[in-house]
View 1 (cartoon, rainbow, N blue to C red):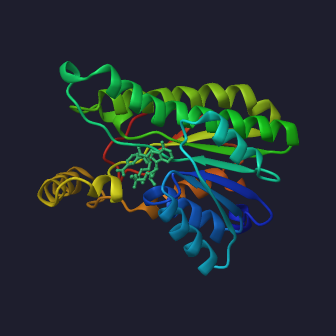
View 2: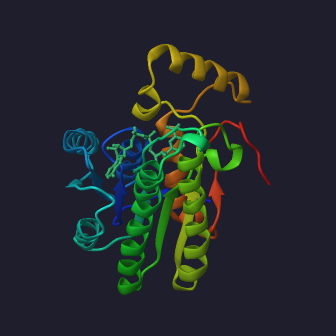
View 3: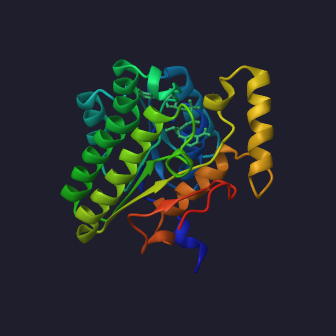
Length: 254
Ligand SMILES: NC(=O)c1ccc[n+]([C@@H]2O[C@H](COP(=O)([O-])OP(=O)(O)OC[C@H]3O[C@@H](n4cnc5c(N)ncnc54)[C@H](O)[C@@H]3O)[C@@H](O)[C@H]2O)c1
């Protein structure tokens, strides 16, 4: 297949969580592939940094400072796109607590950001794509946590499992209109999220993840961004309702 299948020239992408880590890498790569990118996040300074990177590479970026749990504000931002071809719903937070110590407020906070924040973005984007009557691609952010479980990952994993269900359900509902919906479920990726642990704990986890991962390293944000570009572009034109796992082989579910 010609590489033009990855070309996003003339298309518009909306990326949440675009101020740093994986979301920033996605915004920059989608822009490099030719898309005009709308970058949304609650971190205004981080968004400016992403927009500068996009522009340095010759792309165009518009920033939206918002919280993805604010449905109205998010809807307004999505609808401000003149047209929308791609949504990458990447924003998320980490939370870890043993099941027996998990409080309602932990569960609510993580479900609100990691599930409802993705749901609201998907609803707004799909409505806009349906109204346009054009093809579209929606990429959601799950996690390897849905494959591996893991101590402390009740809230985080439950939200990501809900994202997987959302992805499959929406893919079924909007597929007949030419809108594709897929998830990425990365393994351990070196980002501000994973670097927030103290240095010793992080080095220990990275060493353990490296040992457990057949490809012998932890991931980088670009490893995920390339998977997102594939799903966003015509290269994946016959792929919907799927989970793509840029995880170095650490989990190999059917
Ligand atoms: N890093 C990993 O190992 C890994 C693995 C699997 C999945 N993920 C997922 O990838 C996504 C990105 O993670 P990352 O590692 O780049 O983390 P990160 O913390 O580096 O980036 C997350 C971004 O989301 C933004 N954000 C968080 N809550 C928000 C809210 N309520 N409204 C708007 N913006 C908000 C943050 O400001 C930040 O810019 C998350 O959904 C995460 O769960 C990460």
